[in-house]
Image (cartoon, rainbow, N blue to C red; front, side, top):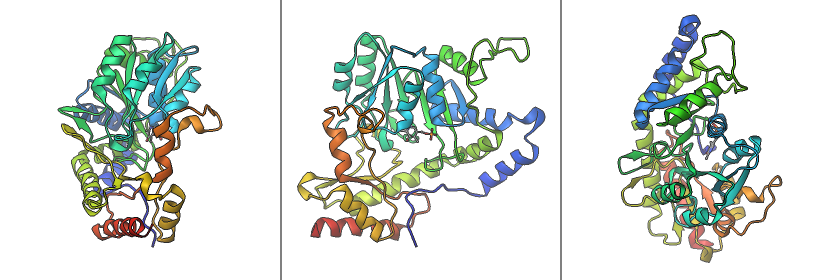
Length: 368
Ligand SMILES: *Cc1c(COP(=O)(O)O)cnc(C)c1O
């Protein structure tokens, strides 16, 4: 039997809520779970406003549009990212500027951000990769000095925090994903979160096909907006997942801890860091093999496939993709994926399966 790398944890609670939404959530009640989910998520995160969306990509698209980003503008992001973070920038006619990551956190390098800011730069997107946290205080200073917006892509960072602030509550706005692979899921789905009422108002209007809350005329859009809404049935599943959020995050963290414990004697293998004063939500346990070991991505994929374990590659640098093809000198973004692998971490993975996977890594390091 294959060990998958991810699958959601669905209990009777999710089924009960989804059935209720399917049976009763129509007519006057067709937004009931959506509003409950948005409110509960805002409360969990500690922000004022949330807008549930059909995907994280859609939330980012609306948010960037609400900031007025368009043709001629530049948005800085880490070269190591999922395409979802860059695509909305391109669709809005702006230019994604890919900068290198730090070798310890695999997140955007603030110094590289600083060096890439020019008069066209409108925003910086900080992606908290695999649950690891960006150096948000440094980024905040750099962005406020340059008078540009800081945004968080927190798709992978539910459960991560710095001090008392949760990832996704530390910038102008943030986006989360509820894709089936994420820590909480609605099948497909996302959310935009913000404390900024102006951004919220603009994004809300955009999310509603350009129809403002303050417009009294029916069916009257004041601008061309988007249709990126989450459905009520999806929100019902999301609300149930959110009620279980502490359990889901604790399990993610326990899985990462067990991998780290099992591999603690392998000084040449590093995993997701948890810097002092921070909590890592541990969405995706990832092992990076030191260059000295000579164990590359191809070998890792082969060994895991032989053992029927579904391991995934570390994100390719976006600048290496055919539509960007920029061949930038982003050393870490090009180097780390060549000697790394994402490990299975679904909620119901058994301890003996984690031990089995760890054992494969230990043997591989011992025998090369
Ligand atoms: C999953 C993910 C997204 C996209 O989420 P969708 O809901 O699939 O649009 C965006 N950014 C990052 C970093 C992700 O991991």
